[in-house]
Image (cartoon, rainbow, N blue to C red; front, side, top):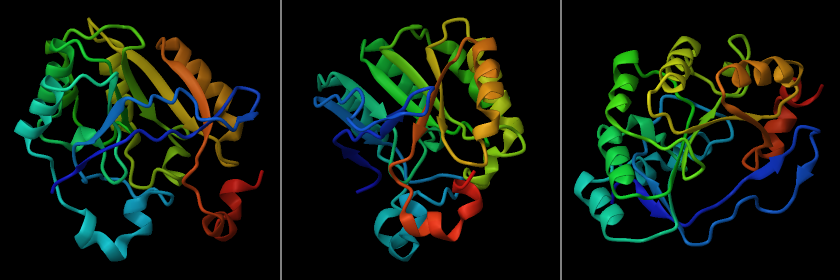
Length: 229
């Protein structure tokens, strides 16, 4: 099997005052998470692909067959379709925009979660053929945990200029989806939250602060400069 189809799992949400809501936020029990691919260019320390390198032959299975993905979308009626992934980033799926086009044509509610790194302007411009809805039923999340000088501290291997390109193209999309900036709270980026929020607001992107549920205590112990203000 390549990639995977999984039940929905949520992270903990942190509001602008940095209070943690310990309930699952927006838990949607009748949603389907589709892991289109196990491919990703990043090496985030809290990610399963990093923490289970010794099992790579078990999980690095490449891409889901396109016909399986489209058949699932067209012939099921989940409340929402979540392109997130435990090992891969959906934008590295070779047929990503085709999948998005079918989700929109079929009138499905969906959410994409990506760092937005390492794709070209021409690749992002392919989205202009799709008429998204600027509504919470069409949600596109960018997981960016810092600015140009800090994002790579956790999002290892990310390329800031390509993230800026993604934000620029999607912000100016003639039929843009609802855009979100999902920021993980770390000591190294806390001083930049206000600046990042203003940057997001200038592009009419909703800015949300979270605490990661993936970070293990051992990583925190080994990297105190990231977690200790």
